[in-house]
View 1 (cartoon, rainbow, N blue to C red):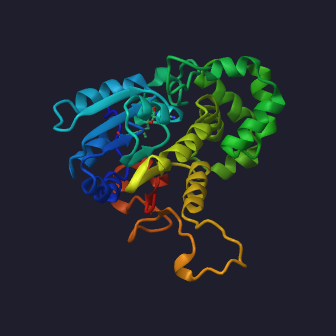
View 2 (cartoon, helix red, strand yellow; view 1 turned 30 degrees about the horizontal axis):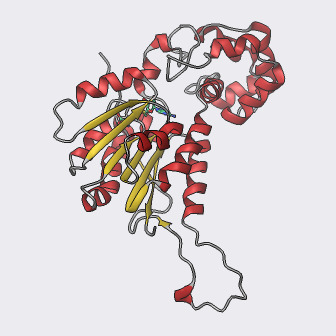
Amino acid sequence: MAEFHVSVLAEQLSAAVAPAINAHPEAAVVDATCGAGGHTAAILGRGRPARVILIDRDPAALAHARTRLAGSACPLEFRHARFSELGKILDELQIPQISALIADVGVSSHQLDAGERGFSFRADAPLDMRMDPTRGQTVAELLATIEVGELAELLRRFGEEAEARRIAAAIVAARPETTGALASVVENAMSGRARRALGKRIHPATKTFQALRIFVNAELDELEALLEVGPQRLCVGGRMAVISFHSLEDRMIKRRFAALSRAPQVPRELPLTAAQLPKASYAVPAGFPRKGVQADEAERARNPRSRSARLRVIERVMP
Ligand SMILES: C[S@@+](CC[C@H](N)C(=O)[O-])C[C@H]1O[C@@H](n2cnc3c(N)ncnc32)[C@H](O)[C@@H]1O
């Protein structure tokens, strides 16, 4: 059986947050994307936080991680929830501040590989794509009623699909209900020029599948909520580490971290010395690359999924 999920950038991520965890052993750590529990396992290999809160919107991931991490020396708390519920969860657990927050956003290998979840065109299955199969609208339900204009906008925005309009028109005409049917509608709708530009290695429906998945899971809204609340909950010296897999997400993380690292503006005419100027409350940790970290050649060869991954880290340096 294929592995549930092979963690990406696990060494780099655990090394990046270890100083914060070891400086505050009394504080909790949050793993906002539990998945197979691989990143938490890597963190526990480097230190012993007071406890770890593991969040995932996919019950299958939580069940897997619970078994994998059983017997851990550190107390673990599993929560079936979304990023946007992070503040509420921490309030319920009476945890005002944490030493580290990690997130590895996107889908797990299990979600992609389990054909019946409807994420992939590699297996024919009902079009579902919900990371949380217990709630929300499936892609098939969405495609049953959506209008061409709205669908084209969605494909452009979340898939950066250049032929969004003609693909949307073909999808609405066919209203496919399975992954296989959607993949062939998109393939047939796409111009020969666009298909040739993709080459043999990229399926013509890749961007359409990505856009629909991002939309039904509200992935960008979820990430925005995490980027808003996460940094506020770090203690001074606490670190937040986020791995993303495409430019839409990485852009959001980069901009939010850059905004947090900017000192508050003061009117130029105020008579302040350099020492009196307000400082930013967050900064990229000393020694960590400002552009983030990507997988090295060995990891890329071992795990092709790591090729598009980028890890960014921020530290709270002031209250
Ligand atoms: C790439 S996997 C994480 C793998 C994990 N870091 C590991 O090393 O095993 C991403 C996980 O995040 C979950 N996820 C994605 N978006 C989420 C959200 N908004 N709220 C909660 N979980 C989310 C997915 O269900 C999936 O299980």
